Image 1 (cartoon, rainbow, N blue to C red):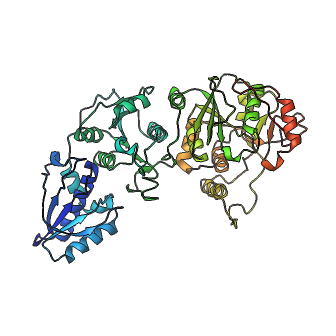
Image 2: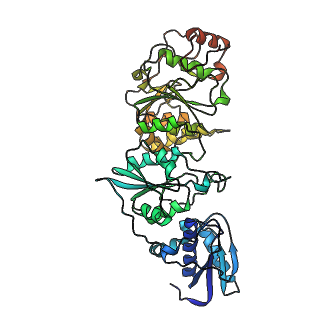
Image 3: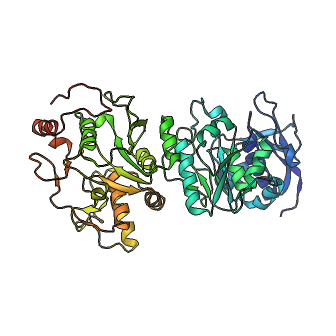
Length: 515
């Protein structure tokens, strides 16, 4: 360590209205600058009507009015390069006290003094009532000023359920301790979870002590949760794949070793209470329709659901429409059908596969044509071998799903799955929740076609060619499934479907469908 230079002082100028998490990041970066340059470290707190100085429990006294020349002023991301620039500015300063004003939100900004930072912020773990044999896992739910903030995003219910699902697969017998600035909201969110304890209102230090007492962490996009996980890190840490989509774009201020949920769940989906409840009920079976309203050319969804009502054996399992707009013909009175707003197919996929232990995945342009069982749909079907050259083919105008398919197929090949087939049959699929979540963890697939390839290559038990059970236009003959595209949606096809399925389902508004 360089000898201290008496002629220079670095002064951490805390950001105006900074919370405890940001204060910790800034103080830690000041420690790093001081050690690297061999100079003294001081700090200055500007009085705030919104925040209190929060570092006194760590033996760091509040100091106000420290005179210095501010030589480094950067509001935004944190990185090693940012710390290098701050050090250069401090050295170039002609005044004895050089002030730095930046959030420094990254481990990189104090990695060289990480041990000293951990010692400075050391806390006694809070004594938790941990059930026998369970592993304590912290879940940090940040709400507060995020709820109505113009550009900061709230991590959603779906994100936390997925993060906790990951922990249930990776951590032995987890029990979740929820830390939040809104415990009432969390009590409602996790009311059906038997392995969750929502902590009562806590001081900020006790909230950190709770997180330090845990072995693994699922955190919000918050510097407070960040430090709670970092100080208590003794297992996996799950973080949002994007920190804030509007403010920081693709910046992720988290260590590479932390698990970034490969689920785009920072958008604010209008999850109806019934959807959250169904996830927690652990129901055995459900039917799921992802639906993009703007792509509808007719009443495809309504007719497809009629075919479910008419021909699918299971008359009790719930049906979920995860869509971009609520269908105008959908009645509220039917308790079997539920609608939830979803921003994208990725969100529908990553939410939908969790809704039951087994999920029948449908599309609005798929119809049943004769009585069909779960067993009929559970057999993986393929339409042929993957054509030669697909893995090396370069598209002039590549789209997302084609890029995803090639990525998945190449990864499968590297895993030893060289006998590759095209499982995109445009028929209903059955996904088992735990298997599907493992696929998402491994591949991060968010589109229909890549998901099918990843899932059914790995879970290919009983696979067989599709054969003649599918048609795409009338006459339907003895086929079981109809699968069509927009250019196949002719007046003849519409008329044949309405002749086969003339009656309204219980969940439909009774109004005619026009050909």
